[in-house]
Each structure stands twice: as C-alpha cells, then as structure tokens.
Length: 202
Image (cartoon, rainbow, N blue to C red; front, side):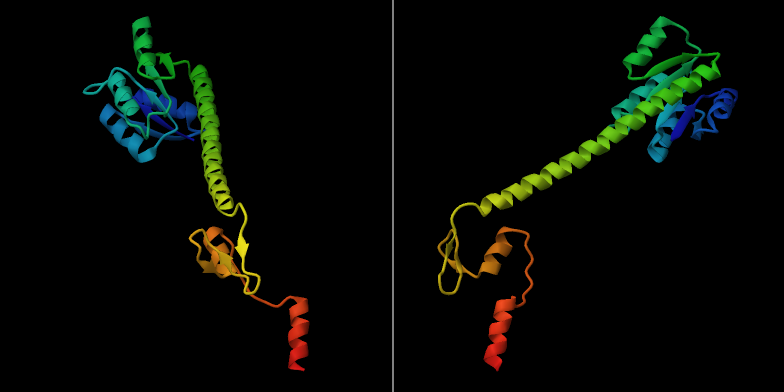
C-alpha cells in the first residue's frame, strides 16, 4: 500500500521514510500544494501530514482533500509539533483519523499507520463486495423482468405452432422467445424426426 508523507522539513520526512519504507510504497511532498497534486496523481492509501507549513498549512490541505469526492476517504494522520488539545480537536474535526505529536515515537507511529491501513483494506473489501452485490441485484432484477414477460397463458397455433403476441399478431416460436428472453437458438433434428426424414428419403 502507498503512503504520502508531507512535511516541509526533509529531516522529518527521512525519519518517517526510513521507519516505513520496508513495508510500504512511499511518496513525499515538501509543501501543501505538492501534496494535493500527489494525492491526485498517486491516490495514496494513507497520508501523514504536517500542520505547520508555509503557504498552505496541513489543516487547509486536509480540508481541500476532504472536499474532493474522489479522495475524501483517504485516511489522514496529522504529524505535528502542535501539542495542544485545540490542535488535536481541530484536526479531528477536519476529518483526520489520528493525531501524532512530534518528536515522533516511530514504533507507535508504525503501529498507528498499520492499523489505519488495515481498516482501509477492510473498507475496500466491503466496498468491492457491495459493488458485486449491486451488480448481481441488477442482473437478478433484469432476469425477473424477462421472466415476468413470459408468465401467463400463451396461445399457440395447433397447426403451425406460432404464438399469438400481446398485440394479437402471430410470431414464430423462435422469434417470440428471442424477443422475450436471452435464449439463442440452433437448429437440428431430434431422433424421431431424423428417422422420419430418413424413411421418406428411402
């Protein structure tokens, strides 16, 4: 899975990269604008985001990412020197899933990253399963719709075996069933008809 690390201090980035590089694919950004661009280019599975950055701080970056429907569900963990209840509350209110203060305990950070990525993996599985169930439901409803069209009594000519349609027209059996179902026809002779045709040919 892919992690985006955002911090204006390269030293902080290097610490996190070294702690996480063995288990994950890592991409990095030194400012908020590059972070937003990388989110769109790389679609990371998790973002580790500094707060105090020039031009565009981490809170604003988080707000902008959450406003993008395609990326709004990417988990964001703030990694910041702002060690205050107000900062943590603001970060969580903006939609972050966690808040880690500097200096970072790397062992604890790795565990929090692992847990959030596992939650994301499970959510993705559920999302895919729901998509499959939705497709299956649509297919089942379509099949039931076709079956309903075939319900009821059909009028069949005793001689030519044509079927009378809802509009009182007469259609060949194959044509009628082909229009009312997904059936595909091939033609051949049953054993009785084959024997009869053989006998006629002498």
